[in-house]
Image (cartoon, rainbow, N blue to C red; front, side, top):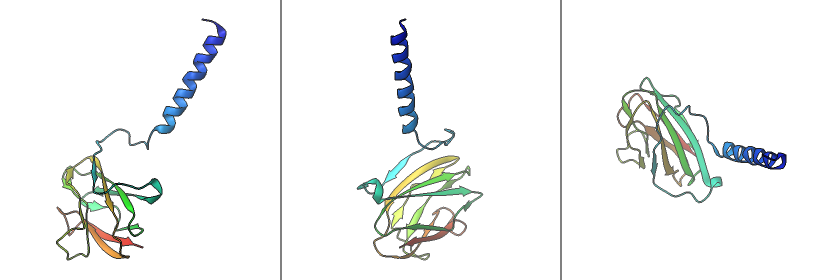
Length: 142
């Protein structure tokens, strides 16, 4: 192979590798599946709020989540337990009609929920509908 052609191929390979490396997401060690449940389309990245929540030992790792009013929320939930969990959002702790009801899924796995934060500022309630007394918290909308 001619030196000029070899150099061009090496440069092309470096460029492609750099471009593909920049397109990858976070490192989840490919240890679990990801699914998406969507209730609204995003108008743009600046309108999206990204939150994470981990379920382990029938507990959430956070008891408070925050989002601006009316923003699209992408909540990535990792279920480290072997039992099913959910994420649902309610007006209050005693509400029975969810503002958003996420699908249940067994672990270990990761599921991404998408929904829109309420338009009215205030403190709402989130919980696992399967374990509502053990797994719950405040969803603060500002």
